Image 1 (tube, one colour):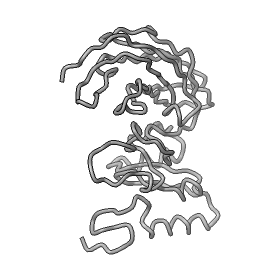
Image 2 (image 1 turned 120 degrees about the vertical axis):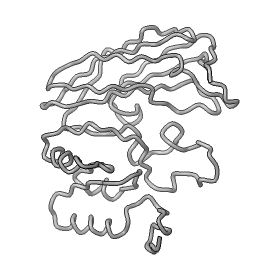
Image 3 (image 1 turned 120 degrees about the horizontal axis):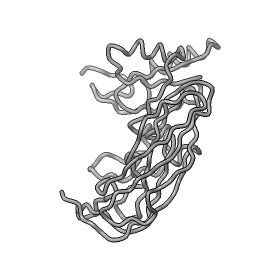
Image 4 (image 1 turned 135 degrees about the vertical axis):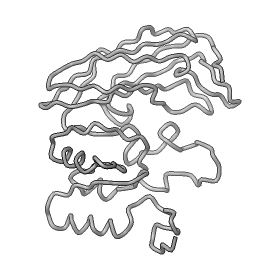
Length: 254
């Protein structure tokens, strides 16, 4: 493609910031003194650092399709409570990522990234607030091959109805190839103001397993940590955590 502007190489992007013309438009809109809401319509993560610091709100719309205009309008008007959560990590810049010279996952995706992202995987806001309590496991000493049940209460602590996405993250025993943590369960809960609902998530043996440096997937012994809340445990204080132990080993079929 004959595209010769900063941030592009033909039809390929060389940066994850906004194109300069769009950035200039945001700055001009901000200079009017009116509230600035940035709606992103994109296919991948963007480093929108200026918008994060200067906009009154950012709405990630992705490529919304035929119903996108109505969904965006209803969300901005407040008749629809936003309840989406980011399915990818939004990095602050390309400097946070290693060169893509191989397929190694070191420092890539939320599972292995060691820095502080602009917005983490699983991040998202609502027009109301939620609180978690009474986190309970079916057992704190699990035998390899058994299933673990996780229960908790979620309460809408705000003044309007809303949907919460309860995210369960599992931190396994550390190895040379283990992730920092992994999203291993989630559920969407619709709550009226002040309403509390009890949620249950189930982690089967395959979900609890890991792949070692030889490519073998197995449930392995050790101490595991669970975080259940509105986002990754490091991204919010609205998370309840607990630990459990797995005894024994069970290899999973390929």
